[in-house]
Length: 88
Image (tube, rainbow, N blue to C red; front, side, top):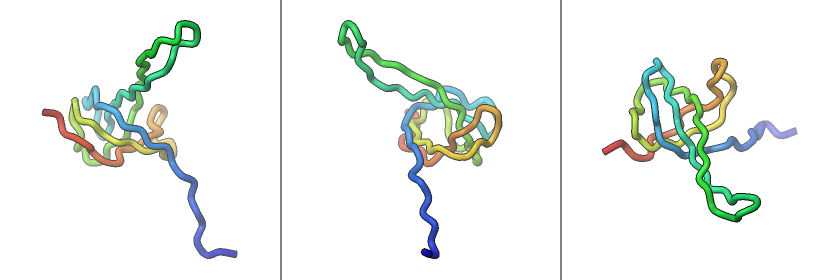
């Protein structure tokens, strides 16, 4: 039996911070492009995730990379991996 236990790969997403009001929590909007099933037009769909930010380092407008993690609270299942780009 191997001594090292291999972990599953975790989902990663990149998005923009839309709220940083709460303590140690940011809200990140993730946009994805999808095709309409009937009209074949490309549409932009977005979803918001509550993300754990331990140091309160991210601000509104920052582009961040988030990673899937264990449940931290009722709504938080993601944590901040890195800040890709600061807001201008």
